[in-house]
Length: 189
Image (tube, rainbow, N blue to C red; front, side, top):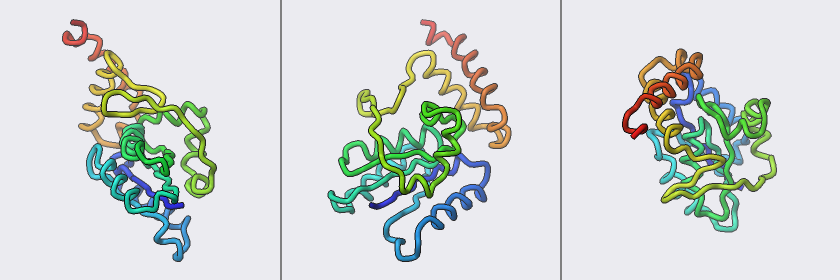
């Protein structure tokens, strides 16, 4: 099995946090296993799609590739869309984002369990339904209309403020996004 870790650095408070997770990943593999895994630091939204395609295309179709989305739901979305056409690919999530809705479907204690990288490496895979809409795929949910607009507005706010503040006040920021979405004339139509 090959392992591809896609890390979204924007899901972390600092570069030091990204480096700690990268070190944790490297510690899970012995020096003789260096060719069995790769770490990619995502540079922008949807960057992971091409990276995953290139990586999986370079692996024998008989060999399984487990893709790890290290970040939030956006990172998971990108990784899913990168590997969906490959039957030898599996996907898991290492939740570090401000929103981790997919992981919460496994219960409140799931975040800490899914952050245990060494257990994820050896865990069995389980099938999960995905949703196809147009050229994209999603897991669990796809937000459109008012909810979709609320997420857009909240993310605009989150990008403009300090990461530490954003992590402390994520719920408040999403509520502000909801209020703005409620009073946007284009949506009310």
